[in-house]
Image (tube, rainbow over all chains, first blue to last red):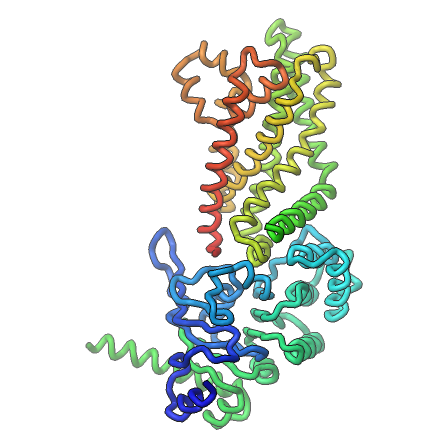
Length: 282
Length: 260
């Protein structure tokens, strides 16, 4: 399979023609999502997305607002159904046993869906217990994740009373409560001060070293460059590039991923406009 | 199955924790409303020579239906505003249980909490009406069955309401368009037998209203079968409504929240 990958690389064939690799944890095949309103299509958020996420890697998911990142994250979390396409987990459709899949996944959404009626401690224990931990395991794990994110002193506070940064940290802590194999982080560092962002990076690096697979959606390109093994640019509901940050820097002859991103978005916009122009001429 | 049970028990623990924190306030509201009802119908109106025996009649109907008031005010409104706001529910929907089970668990948790909330109305009712209401007329076995059933019905009916009235500005309309007609034509202020004498056609039409079976079933259990709809019929129809509200409510919620 590795040789086959090299052959594909040599001929620069698109990544989605590859068969699921042995080390692929998730293989996304032609994923489509159309939002409907009163039975009529409202928006095509994903238009045939295909790529793979390797076991133990951190994949940065990048794109402008409305590119389809959050939709893709929601589908991969096992919550939202796609309109068409397939998500394979260890070569099996996640929908063949969605509860088993959900047990392995931790999802930290962009919008903090905190339980404002419970204290942080209660909320974490609820989460751990609902994922099947025993009472003592849940308590121990809650203390551990609270320490990791420095929120232990707020254990008795209601989530509603926390500041934005602490809410975000708590959300991350809750995502990790059941020690998932695959975590999806949708803009996890928005609103965090630089010190906390770096603290979170350290946690993510530690998780990666422990073998956790991470899908990291972010607008901070320095974050993506530092943490990602590969990045995936998504634009207008389509995957445009999946490559390592180093390869992209070389290909675009840039020194930072941010410059690559700006060039890439400009290129894509020109491509879209010229496509529209061609269509209007014909 | 174990994961499902585990999730349900944890959700119940969560619901009870939240309920315990707001119990005093919610119980006070319910008791005040209940007290006013039975004092007016049990003592004030009979002073003018009208509505003798209305006290126990209204007491039983109130115990049966006040859970619905609390469910609409607190649970249904909370779910609708949560979906438009914090979306706590979306966290439950990523947990390792089928999304249908999340909704079923929510309905059963509400049922449990409402059953506990309205339990206090039994001693309050007996204390206020005292000799007007005799415990000898109560069939305890039937009361147990109907009390559990009607609270499960209210839980699933609330779930259905949340799925049916999805817009946040529709919450106020719930009272006018759903709760008010259900109560007015729900054999709450009169018995079904009386309704038949008023107008048989309208009385028969009200049989599509599930609240009729809630109030009549409860009266059959607490005041005796005579003068009420058949107890077993009420129980069966309520279970039919539980299944219907559960099935349709879950389908609506799944579509609304766009979940697997």
